[in-house]
Image (cartoon, rainbow, N blue to C red; front, side):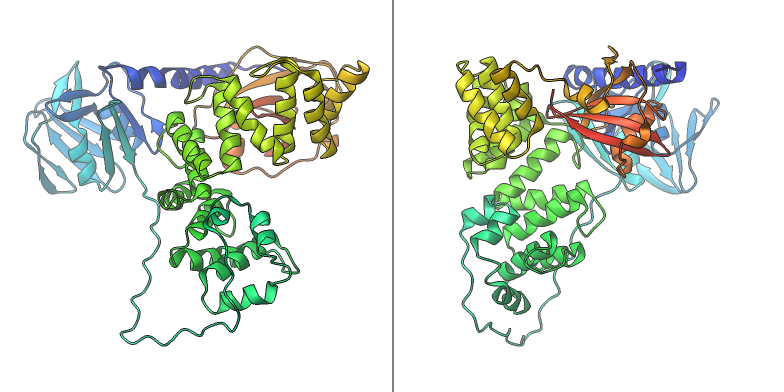
Amino acid sequence: MRFTKKLLATALAFMMVFALLPAAVLANDTITVTIDGQQVQFEDQGPVMVGNRVMVPVRGVFEALGFDDVDWNRETRTATLTRSSDTVIITIGSDTFTTNGVTHALDVPAQLIGGRTLLPLAAVLESLGYTSTWDAGIRIVIIITEQPTEPEPPEEPPEEPEPTPQPTIEPIYVSERALSIYSVAELLDYVSAEERLEDIRALAEAGDALGQLLLGMMYHTGSFGISEDPYRAITMYRLSADQGLARGIAQLAVSYAAGIGVESNREQSVYYARIAAEMGNALGLNQLAFAYASGQGVPVYDHERAVYYWHLSVAQGSIDGKGNLAVMYYHGMGVDQCYYEAARLWRYTAEAGHSGRQFALGAMYRDGRGVEQCYETALYWFDRAAEQGNEDAQEQLNYIRYGIAPPTAIGRHLGVDYTILPEVFSDGSGDYVTTWQFIELHGEIDLDDFPAFAPSPEEILPYYFFGSERGDVILAHWWNGTVFLFIDLGDGQFHRQWISN
């Protein structure tokens, strides 16, 4: 594995951005500016507060917004900022400025501070049609250049609406708890969807919100003889959501996050998740918590807020919420690290049949982490996970029972010896990946032996940023402790494999 100077320089630059962000947010005298979730870097002079207005250097925010032509007239002390569609002219000390020929008033004029021209941020942004938010508690300016698309309001009904055809079947009853915490498969099983397929279809056609939701789930999963059709699925979800069904709104949040029937849009997902969460729906609370934990669809990471929403989902009885909250306690993200609480919460998900959580709980009993060490209990959970095909659990069973030392998951998958290189990089992009490392192989591998997957641009972004090449092997650590092995197969293709040890 050869590291180029460009690779190291780029990696170090991103590490510095990621490492400096918390300090900038916490420092009492530092003002942080983000644009669509990305922090703006300043040179020698950063933003300052003058009166009650944030003043920023021309270099930084406005260059990030596309103003790559800045002209300074020393005699008139005037700065002219230009990009393809806009021109801003502002004079030091003047109480007005112009944007595209329109004059705007200033209560704090532009000033020379530290040898740099500083402009009043809010006034100039507003003249350009941008939205900004000032959070005085953490001294951060959040700039959003594109707002998520709001759903179109329903058309006004006619003054004398035609009566809606009533179904000739009895409505299907589903408890609020089931609509809040059951998975799609569990909910369809709960209403005996296979036996009541025609009833559900008739209810949906008659405009029943629950019937529309259930039929959407069938299109979503391709179950009970209905072909999988994500476009019809999201149409049904929209119809149920328009009638105010919280689970339908939560399913829209899931669909936009995963790109089911629509182009993936994390901001739109957060929009719907927030509505469903405010209605008390556990699925909506889980989606909103995940957005803050992963930094997707929101301006910045906020693990404490993620923990807050997952606690609310757990109060609703959400098993997924308990599993995700356990991860936060295990790694000390947004809460004080507490293995005992992680083990307590993981027990719920393990008992619900989640093989990954069964393996995790078995490992905690094996190591005595958060629980009293007990190999018998560890074997019990490893055995349950192995019954579901969990290879790591089976290896642990062989090791405890027969002394057969398990190979590492990395070595087992690659088939050659290796060394994990010590350099740890961070993408700092607010995506799933938080850190990653290159792996040096001690033998040859045939890249044709590793099937490829088609990643989305945001999935491959961290690796291209740091210049991975065909044949490079990368260990990527997700925010929630999950570890993946990536192999660059060239031409934008990667092999991906989940790794647990």
